[in-house]
Structure formats: structure tokens, C-alpha cells
Length: 609
Image (cartoon, rainbow, N blue to C red; front, top):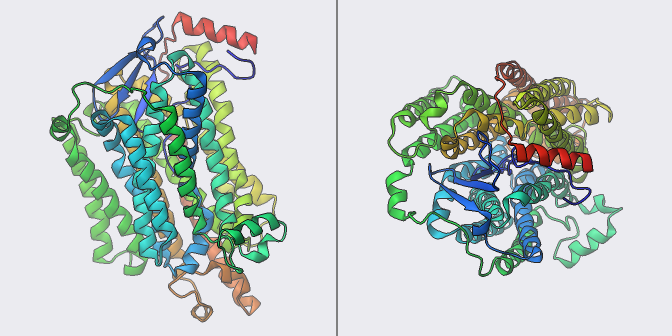
């Protein structure tokens, strides 16, 4: 073990991330790579589970492809590049959206759907990736996903209206989800088990970087020329790249830039993985896929979630008590209930296996993960809006101001992981994870509670400190819930149950943004004075004009309405997180048998460091 690299045992190493826009370093939705948590093993052996299947392939180190360190490094660089694109694309629009909405004359409902479309298609397609990669190959899924993502990005950049952009974002979400799933599968299958945690941690840095870089890059690409006084080199580059004098770094470049980077990453991955034979079950076939895949479960999940999201989105326009709004929301809930009943009795490989519904710990983790992602995603998008619309910050300034929230959530996951490892070694239980979960939710509840005080008169110290607290609290939950979840289940249940875990997590992120958008829209449109339509706001959004409204009395009134509307979002998030904190106290302490070899190696490495 090299100096300066903290040892992370495969037993408690943070699992690979998922794509949530929103979530800088959550675990992977497509695979879980770990030694058997319920048994003590002295051989370095690992199960690579395809989450949509109950089968698993046991890979000994002798079965892994033999790659030089240089090729391993090149493969991980290519993987990191593509992973960075897929994850950053989810957050880069947070600071771009006000500018995009103004340019494409988006309504407040359409504003929300630019973010929702990416996550919804990502959620819907996740269950397919693992099974399809068993049939057509890991690399085929990866490169196909990169092509779809690049195509979606190209269409986003070329969008001439908001509907075009929403559809293109959905296409990009399909590809982005496949990239995340494939990258973690492939990198795990080319690295020896004893080194897997170290390489996994190296890739996890990508998530932290994307969480920080996304809002800043979005701000850079949305700034006007007058905002580049101290960035002459960026302005010059933008002019050479074809930007115009008023907006050299158009928001379209936030999507166009994905194309060359994606191509470069694909070339690196192709060369480094050329000739490498990756593992896949020998019995996998399209026929088996059609016979066993839970299509009905997936359709009910997506249809039910979509109905609820559409119902919330149209609630303000049609009225919350209108038949269309109530029908959509009630129908969505009914479809989800029917889907849950179906999952218990289906003979196919259920997305939500019945063992999960019988496990109280798993149900608690589902609730915590759902509420955690609701708050995190709402915070990412509407803090950026607060800084631009209320404080008058430029998109670039909003990106910098969002750093305490995004950077705090990214960095908080590291000490939380170190503490969990230390406490797990000491207690041989999941009590460390339980403490981190409860403490993180308490801190996040306090942070969001304080954010309800942010208004148009808030000082710099408040909109740095309050989001920082919220971010730190949320960041502590990126790994711990999944670790408790895996300990609560039998090894044979992990594959299909983990798929359910990440579907819940993705759904929480998607619903969180939709609910936040509905709350904001309802609170603003019902209170805007009639004079607002004279300033180009009306049914569309032009947040850049808010701080130029005249007279001053009207401007202050509008800013107060927008600030209080965003405060309502934090008011919804705060009790949700508080409820989650109380529920987390019900988590039991589950025993963990690390095995003598793991304990000895941890003690040795901790002594060395």
C-alpha cells in the first residue's frame, strides 16, 4: 500500500456512485462489487452481481484480464472523463437554466422539466443496462451509451425551442445512465480484488469534481461579455470558437463541449481495452431476457412516477383541485400500489423482490434514501435560482456561491467513510453507519431550516454558512445507507434488491425536483402583481430582468415574492429531513464479520499511516 493513500477495506469501502444529478458520490445502480459481507474469507474473491439478475459470476483474480499498470491507468482516465461528463451534465444546467429559460421563453413548468427529463429517462433505463451487457457485452453497452449521450448533447446544444431541449435532455439521460452503469462494471472487472477499493476511490473523486465543476461551468457558459472583465482569455477563446459579441460563451457550449471530450474518452477507452475479454454469464441470451425481465414492474414504476410528476407540474396551471390534477396524482399513486402488489407475486426477476418488502431495515433505508435525494436535488437547482434571481448574481457568480453546498456535500462523504471504517473495525456492527446517517440527517435538517431564513436582504455570511451546513449533512448519507442495506440482506438477495435501492434513489431525485418546481410555481404565479407582465415575465421566465424592474418598490415586491417562494421549498424539505432523522433511529445494529485477514490488514495499514 503506497504512502498517502488511506486504506479502505473492500468490506466498508464506499460503493461506486450512481448518477443523480444531484448526488456527487452515491453507489452504482448497476453492480455491487464486494466480498461476501456475511462470511469470513481468506481468499481474495469477489462477486460481481448483475442487479437485474439473481445470478452472479464469481471472478477469481486468476480469471481477470492481465493488464499493465499503464493500461489500467489509461482505462481509468478514459472512464473518469466519460463519467465526469455524464455526472456534470446533471448539475451544469442548474446555473444555466435561468438563462436557457429566458432565451427559449420557457414557462415555469417547462423550466422544471429540463432537469426532470434527464433524470426520468435515466431512472427508466437503469434496469436494462446490466442484463443487456450480459448479452451484447460490457464494452458494447458503454460505447453505445456514449454515442447516445453525445447525440443527446448535440441536440441539446442545437435546440431551437424548449420542447426540443426537453426531449434532447431525455435522450442524453438514456446515454448518461448507461455510461455510469458501464464504467463501474468494466473498471471492476479489470482490477484485482485487493486493489479494487483503491481504484474505486480514485474514480469516486470524479463525482466530487463534477459536483463542484458543474454549477461553475454552467455559470461560465451562461455569462454575458460584460461579466468577463477578469476572464479575457476565456472571452478570446470563445470568440475563436464562434461566440458572438454579446454572449461569447453561450449556454449551448455547455452541451457542445461534451462532444470532443466524449470522443477523446472513447478513443482512450477503446485503445486501453482493446483485446480485453470481459466477463459475462455464458447462459445470457435475448430469449432469456424477454422471458425473465420484469417489464410490467418497470412500466408501472415509470408510469406511476410520471403521472405524479405531471400532476404536480400542471397543478398550478389547472388548479390543485381540478379533476385533471387530482386524476393524475391519484392515478399515479394507484399505479405504484398496483405495481408493488405485482412485484410481490410476479414469477419474473422483480425490480423490487418480495424479500425487500419483508425486511424492516430495507424499508427504512428506502425511505431515508428517497427523502435524502428529494432534498438534495431540490437544493442543487433552487439554490442556483435563488442566487441569480434574488441576489442578482450572474450565472458564474451563482456557480461560485453554490460551492459551499456542493463542495460541502462532496467533502463530507470522506471523513464519514473514514469514521465508518474505524468504528466498524472496533464494533463489528453497523452502529457507525447508523450514527453517520442520523447525525447527517440532523445536520441537514438544521441547514435547510436555516435556509428558510434566506431572503432578498440576506448577507454573504448567511448564504455561505446555511447551505454549507445543509450540504455537509446530505453528504454524510452518500454511502452509509447503502452499506446498512447490504448488511440487512442475504448475499443471494443483493443483486435484485440493490437494483430496487437505486430505483428508489433515482425516483426520489426526480420527484424532488418536480415537487420543488410545483411549489415554486404555485407560490410565484399566484402572487405576482399584474404589472409584472409589462416587464416581459408573464407566463415565461426572464430572471435576468428581475433586478432591473422599475420602479424600485415593484422590484422589491417581486424579489420578495421569489425569495419567499424558494423559502417554501426549504420549508417542505426541512420536515422531510427531520422525519427521516427520527426514522433513522429505528435502524438496528447489524453484525459484521470482517474476517481475520481484513482486520489484520486494516490494522497494519492504519499503523503505517
